[in-house]
Length: 312
Image (tube, rainbow, N blue to C red; front, side, top):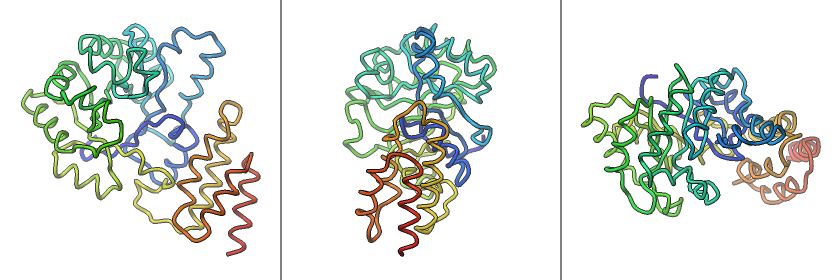
């Protein structure tokens, strides 16, 4: 892809198959990722557990290019997961080396790999071997407890990665401090100084596509990954500004798709976190949201929204 590249961030219990299809329909980014999936679980879990994980790897042709994201601290399991992604027809494999969640870090995966560059490189090589001709990428952070970009990034750039996405915070920062985009600029400088062809994408606190373009211009990054800005706004990448009725109708469509694709596998309460974003910033939003939070299925949600629209 030619820069600037605008990608949708993988977010657990957010960018599932249902939401990705809605986004692909109303505002498709240049790249999409699955929610992160445990490579260890795919390799070691009994059939029932493995089948649950495979649900998170289901995708539609409309989402292409679609990249499978995995996490693990075991190179052999990453190799097997990458091979599975190739068999399933994914367009790429991404390794999560940035997740700050304690249950992931305690496994030695996610952001914990920043503390072990040797193991991180072994995991990348496992992915490259399993992925075959698929491109392999990494999503990471500036550091673990402190900013160590100058030491960490060159280690990653020693491997044949298609791109590296840098969330411009440390693991310790979580999302409590503003993203430091000047460090994304530094990452580009480090890449250029090493003569690497790996693309650098920045991530963190990007509010819309105009902001993403501006950050690419200011830092020299090849692209930007947008995450939280997608909440309640499937039109983010198209830059269309929807009417309130459009937002509510697409929310119902999203809910029906969630129930159709994931209703047998995931709690309906996962869908409700989206209502806080779709139903916000207009008169009567609080009351409408309260009614939606009590709904138990897509039919009830549709009835509530139809009644609201007719009453306006």
